Length: 210
Image (cartoon, rainbow, N blue to C red):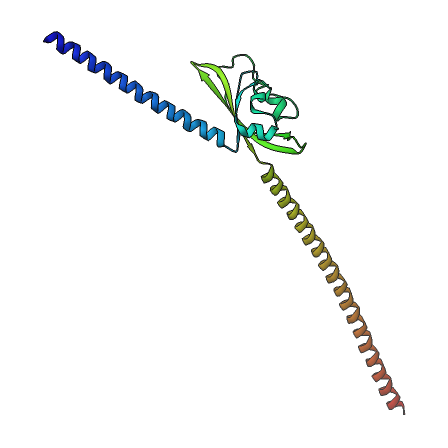
């Protein structure tokens, strides 16, 4: 009986462990599928690259932006695809790369398949496996439309400022002319008054002499 109980307990423990492993596996699969769905549907470019910046994986947004088939992008150089100067964001990093830090807000300009310039901001997050650098995970956000709007706003502000300056200069010129005209009118008025005084004085002298 003792042996049977021991065997039953071991069997139940094994069943519990198998069920727990099954639940963990299902949960991991759900989390993996959830993450994969987010990556696939993201409007931002999400790519994973090796230390030499060759692409290991990339989401459909990368294909849409470059016009290159998703599978054909694998193994290509990130700098050659997404920059004009073909420089790695980690070009300044040398020696021990195990402690390399992430790069945030890197703004670069590339050209889409139509030859149009597109501005993207990139964040690079190093991924370590047992303290050894394994990948760079890059997140690229297309900010071209926002930059264009910003440039339009700046242009409108400059135009408005120029119009204000021109209007101010025009008003100052008008005020200067009005001031000069008023001064000339005052001088003419003084001359007329003085002439009137002289005429009256002449009449008075003539009357006295008569």
